[in-house]
Image (cartoon, rainbow, N blue to C red):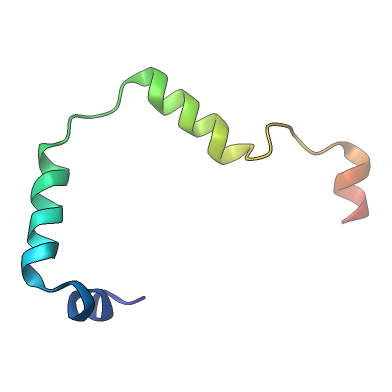
Length: 56
Protein backbone atom coordinates (compact mmCIF):
# COMPACT_ATOMS: atom_id res chain seq x y z
CA UNK A 1 0.00 0.00 0.00
CA UNK A 2 1.40 3.38 -0.93
CA UNK A 3 1.36 6.35 1.43
CA UNK A 4 -1.25 8.01 -0.80
CA UNK A 5 -3.51 4.94 -0.62
CA UNK A 6 -3.09 4.78 3.16
CA UNK A 7 -3.95 8.47 3.49
CA UNK A 8 -7.03 8.06 1.30
CA UNK A 9 -8.20 5.08 3.37
CA UNK A 10 -7.48 6.45 6.86
CA UNK A 11 -7.75 10.19 6.43
CA UNK A 12 -5.48 12.97 7.67
CA UNK A 13 -6.88 13.07 11.22
CA UNK A 14 -6.17 9.39 11.86
CA UNK A 15 -2.67 9.62 10.42
CA UNK A 16 -1.93 12.68 12.57
CA UNK A 17 -3.20 10.82 15.66
CA UNK A 18 -1.00 7.83 14.86
CA UNK A 19 2.06 10.07 14.47
CA UNK A 20 1.27 11.86 17.73
CA UNK A 21 0.82 8.61 19.69
CA UNK A 22 4.01 7.11 18.26
CA UNK A 23 5.96 10.25 19.23
CA UNK A 24 4.64 9.96 22.82
CA UNK A 25 5.58 6.29 23.18
CA UNK A 26 8.72 5.62 25.23
CA UNK A 27 11.64 3.85 23.59
CA UNK A 28 11.72 0.08 24.17
CA UNK A 29 14.08 -1.35 26.77
CA UNK A 30 17.17 -3.31 25.81
CA UNK A 31 15.40 -6.52 26.91
CA UNK A 32 12.52 -5.88 24.53
CA UNK A 33 14.90 -5.09 21.67
CA UNK A 34 16.87 -8.28 22.32
CA UNK A 35 13.68 -10.37 22.41
CA UNK A 36 12.35 -8.84 19.20
CA UNK A 37 15.69 -9.27 17.47
CA UNK A 38 15.68 -12.97 18.32
CA UNK A 39 12.08 -13.39 17.14
CA UNK A 40 12.61 -11.52 13.88
CA UNK A 41 15.88 -13.20 12.98
CA UNK A 42 14.74 -16.72 13.98
CA UNK A 43 10.94 -16.75 13.60
CA UNK A 44 10.59 -20.51 14.06
CA UNK A 45 12.81 -20.48 17.13
CA UNK A 46 15.63 -22.36 15.48
CA UNK A 47 18.31 -21.83 12.91
CA UNK A 48 18.35 -23.94 9.74
CA UNK A 49 20.74 -26.85 9.74
CA UNK A 50 23.39 -27.24 7.06
CA UNK A 51 21.31 -29.91 5.26
CA UNK A 52 18.22 -27.67 5.26
CA UNK A 53 20.20 -24.78 3.82
CA UNK A 54 21.76 -26.84 1.02
CA UNK A 55 18.49 -28.59 0.14
CA UNK A 56 16.74 -25.28 -0.58
